[in-house]
Image (cartoon, rainbow, N blue to C red; front, top):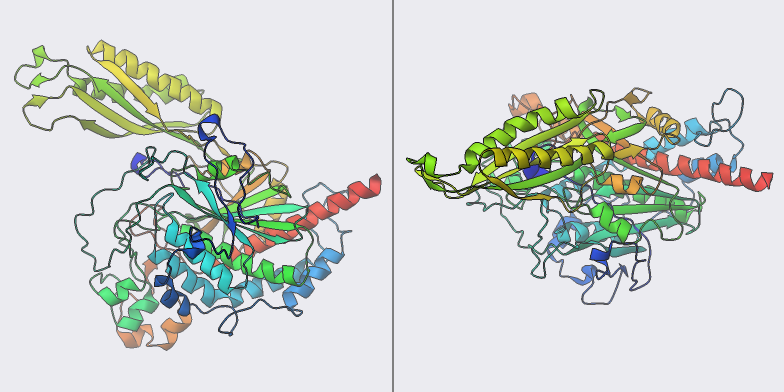
Length: 614
């Protein structure tokens, strides 16, 4: 999620999953600048030595061996016999003559069936809870290997391996190529720069040596008949350039007899914290991937039992944090593959909502966002003789002050917008030298694309005139190559989204939320498909990890850990101590599965009604 600090600006990249042939060039729907980039997508497994699945992944063997998969088999296979979930789903889909709650008995096009709702929802919840050990271990595995946008090689390998171990081998890789990467693998459009680590002082080994940002690490899985209707579910994959300070979960504390704030125990830290120093899953993407993996397992088990009609497209998308990966995947044709999706859904863990609450709204959910770099040039010289210089530092200060009136005096008071200068750099650095140029960096945000463009125009106008007034000049203004549009929740889809959120929420009703000026590249998906984006509450509750283990190994009192179980989960996204309430993992699985099945029934009902009327 793109937040206000320019150096950590985020952009969700959307990956769609589809079982493609061995090598397939995507439909060309990209901009002319990207016309030469043709991603290669291979169906797993492949004998190609260049396939992502063929890259040496022996490092992963021990990690996978410790995952408690949903079955007890050494090589887990999906169930092929009847299961309670499959029976409930069949019963649910068998009754297409359902009441959507409309007072006149009509169908609004976004209704949720009522015939077997209780049985289906109870079973989805139960099945989601049954795979909690798998979810917990998977999330912690992904958390240990955070990777920056377009560099998610290990992350992609982990997901591919987990899918294969779960008996799911019909997926494609190679999605979301970075069209802004230079030939040497260095991106020229990073919204943040990796800084020198300066040594690792947290006792965790940094085994991340992959600086190739050419991308292509997205994964697409299609589950079902391969025919319409089609529903799309998405999770983002990338991490942030943050040194992790997250307290260890109490079950790891108890195992090693350490207080939760003890960061010097190498063994216990290595079980949880980032193995890639200076990189961290501080935005919950490890949780998003885990919840979608759990949903993929349950949905694939239903597909093997022919328990639902249509197709569910699962996408694991790289480069959300500033790389516009969703745009890349859209340009590569993920929304045009057969069958094209009718609805798309995504979610984000949200620390300001209590755990168990689900927030959603109609219309703008997240803002449009862009970044800027402005170079102001003057005439440098000795600080003792300012009258012989044209000081760009003073010009920059004036620009910053004048920009404070851009929103208050240019926008309609009923509109929302933000212009924040977050960095000022100048040449030189000596105490007695006035530099010849200075650079301003920052972000612009709004709740409409039109307002964003208005703010960009105003930004340049103010900077240009202010620099000239101080005898300097605005040498250049550079905006992001892929600014993010507003993430819009489709108004016609909202009644459906609100009803499903209410079913899954701990409270029994959805939580109305205000829009935020954080940004998401899921917006690029929502531009092409009616969509709904949800906030999954995870704040205001203390996370204790594996509660059963915490209770049975030592017990908080017996272990003498005074702070056992007191790990806050309401710290903001992108915070170095951001911590997930792992209780939300099963609820996220339930939300994904519920959205997919009920949306398919909704679309099947509409299709049957249209056929009947014709």
